[in-house]
Image 1 (cartoon, rainbow, N blue to C red):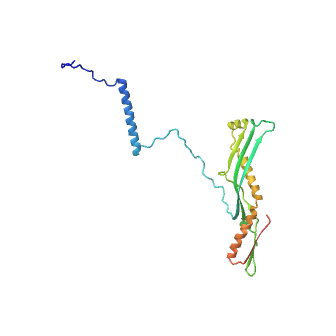
Image 2: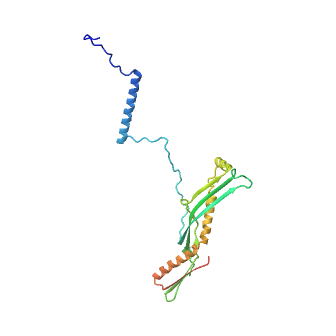
Image 3: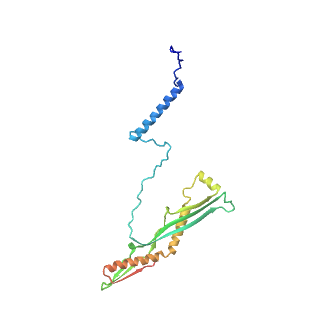
Length: 228
């Protein structure tokens, strides 16, 4: 009790030792975060990134030039095709759930029809004595190799037996789809042959040469094709 009669009250006690240490640690951590964010905002240190983020590395070799070939083709027509390939490889008397491989594939590709001007024979261009008419004999149009567009082609469905899956785990087969692609190309090539694409190329080439030669002063232009 104080001299004036009032009861002394104990002064409020601060945090105990462990609690005080915890507050100091938390305060230091908060200060560190503030400083870190501030320095990142000012660009003094680089941004921290996820240490487990995905990375992609391109280790491909540089392209190798194999050859250069001069072309004298006049591409007169092009056909765009789409085929559906349903290819299944299995074994007789073996259940499909054990050994089976079936792929449903939609293939999109194009085929060009061209006339090779480099194969025009000597004497294939004949001009009349009066210079008013000209006759041109060209080689028959040909179909170029089918170009399978992998960006527009896709696998719709695929079924594989248990043994097929186990075999993939053991050794795999990176060329497993080549048979499907080859079949799609063959189907497109056959469709191009039956589509009248070469006939369209003949007509387009004839019109092109008629317009070109008439612009040079010839009044009559005759374009014929040799047998393929």
